[in-house]
Image: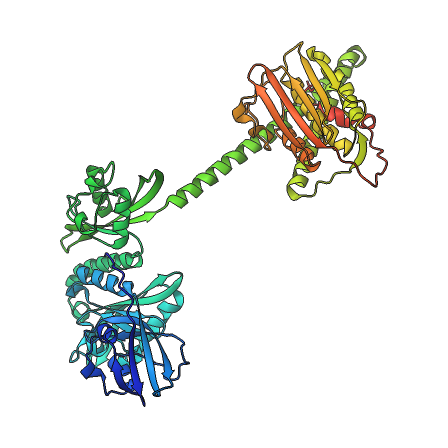
Length: 635
């Protein structure tokens, strides 16, 4: 339904001694009553005339109170009422500020189009005070008020019209309290010794998380209940199907609902949400009315009529579920909808039309994709960890089996050199396992914010020089040469020498792993006054610029295969980056494929005022050096 916002009306009436003495045109316009019908009446009579329930006669000056009222033409409207005192002539001025009430107009119009006498009657209740806002013409028959017209009880509280049917208000309140639809089947009632049976539903309409209205439907099923068993069984299926259909549709009125003809799938009617959906798919659509009679094939891209016909057939044969997932592109954005189809059939099982409801599941699909991506990442991490643990363990187990073989043959002395070599291999792989475990522990500390530095004033030049010195023996097997250059002999900065050494050793270790035989690695320290720059460069295989950020993420490697040229867990660069950033520094990389890489570390030239002696010298931490190079020389 298309809405047009009305111009705000300033409706008011004046009373003196509680008698209406003046009304303006806007007041008569919104109520439908003339001056002759209003002037001279007391305010209490006017409130009764407008059927305003529980009106507050003692409301405070200039404060607004919200009410529903019924016009002369039995149309329900919502207003905010306030009043003020005019001291000059001791009159009261009542203001009626009309509020838009699209819900009632929309839903009643929709239900009147689809509802038939065979399906019963309906009423709409306001949830706060259980005031009847609107109903179908024959709704009074349920309350045995057939002598009266619906305008005699629209705007009244349930207690005023219930007529001893106390369970109705109870069920209404239960629907409001639970927010769930309530249904009573074959409810037995006796009026003047006459017995009747009724089915009724209370369907809560939730707006912004709160029950605002209740739609009540009721059907007199006395004849059905008293009918012969065979006839009853034939009709129960039809009635139940219709009720299930309407319950589901009403509960989903906030979704796009479209009625389609069958089997040509032309649009018969649709709600406002349905119009908005189709307008998004086809922006050239001018208005809702122009959609009626158009085939779905002219609106939906890639609409497969044969597929939908087969889908409806399978629904009737209980082979398919009601929904089909469809992908649309709306304004360049991918959108996913579950298109739910409900066939509306007659007593002979013939399909009359199709109710199509669209449910937007885009966020659900996106969330599922994120979960799947997260699971893939976890699988990669576990596979990586498994490989890092299995490789050194296999080497150690192989060495143990070889020792066992020598023991069984009692030829230890004859194989002394082999045993020494294998012990070295075992030791290196133990270093590798220790490094891996230490990295896991440090990674957990970093993630939890518990990783701490022990800062001291250090000569950074001597520290880097020692690191290069102890690295030499690990590069001989590849015939790689390492060169150290500096533009200053001494530079004191505040740092944790142990952790900073780990970070630099990791960069040198990576340079060795990815360098070609008989190549060179360049380590350079440059004093820039406010900062110190340390770089490690190689002329190895290089890194694609698309991977510059990825290599610093935990458990990320460019080569994920188990036969990669260089071993590693994918934690080293992440931990090194974290250590450098804890020093208030930064790390970056420059590289070209086939020409090598250059990692730069920039540290601030700061010193501590209250320095303490550092006893943690690099020469005393050879185990740490062995661990950092363990994945180079591990076999």
